[in-house]
Length: 462
Ligand SMILES: [Ca+2]
Ligand SMILES: [Ca+2]
Image (cartoon, rainbow, N blue to C red; front, side, top):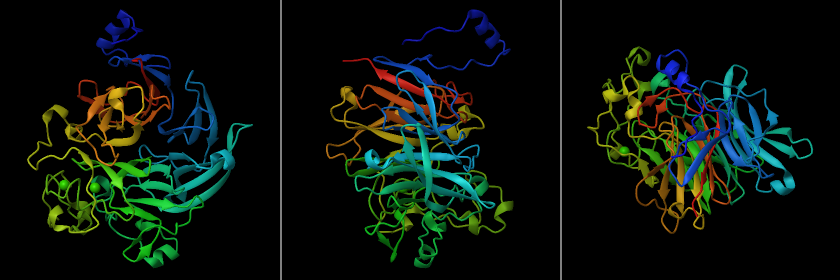
């Protein structure tokens, strides 16, 4: 462990007496992690960083969800440059704001950069994909153009990851807005509802929730998109809950999404596939989850939601859903038996922190020739709830998960995205500014140690 002691004994006494709030780390401060890694804060003071990519200039580019900005960061010294601010972005405490960021595959000639964010269309919140052109002389993103507008938005489960595929198509993960749970429990969950031909013709995208979308760089429906239930639309895959991670490894599209109280998922997405939600969580095994349609409950708004109270609605068994295009995840985090203790008193009022989920927010891939031998050919997943990275080794054909999850770099933070350097020696992580999570000891924590930061973990081995 390497940890610079920067706080005085007197400060510790005041801290113990509860007279000061804990000091937060600043840029350059080290983060204690196990050898052969060292960790430090590269940048702090960010406003809810959400997406992190390698820019065309060897710099790290990131979006600030609440800051409404795209920022470039020098990976050597943490120097920040603001490339763009979008006043139109509609920001919320979670889930809403400026989200994903992707460079066009032909960026070298086109200079095009794609973004997605929530905005207000009159009084109605919507979600759009827009693109900008990078002007290297001014280091600004200019010439905005809407690519796809009018995608549904809401206060929960927005999804928002944006990637280009090797096929030149643009993919957006879109959540189901958290309908059928919590404060949105009386709203119908449309993750299985398919767009009709009439809706598509009218650019009515209300059925695009709980889907992964695939579009041309101009926002059109690609000719080779799947025909699902007789209709071709922007919909590529169906039945997602809150998909926040999308990543191509070669031709394979990996996705991670948040499960309910169990069954966070790592999926391989295939055109036209149905990933089950909200009828199936994880595997089709009737373990610990059954769908109840709250929107059909009489006087739904007056019914105490409770977490697991039976209501006057049938539970839909997973095994009763026979869709032949159902795709199982390649790994869950985790599938638990129905009798699992969902109310462990150790977690107090935040019982969900004790559930067997990790809240996966992004994923990256560690290549077969990287210097960290143990990490080769693995998927690396960032966890919001557990403030850690998890490694999933892949099979040789890169289509199957092998072995169990291996945890790295636990800190009292929420990890929003992971990004690995091209030389495989640096692992970058952006963190949420606030929220609920677990600390290093696995106990509930609401004070982020490195809020709104860009952290770097460097490999010091041979
Ligand atoms: Ca699923
Ligand atoms: Ca299941």
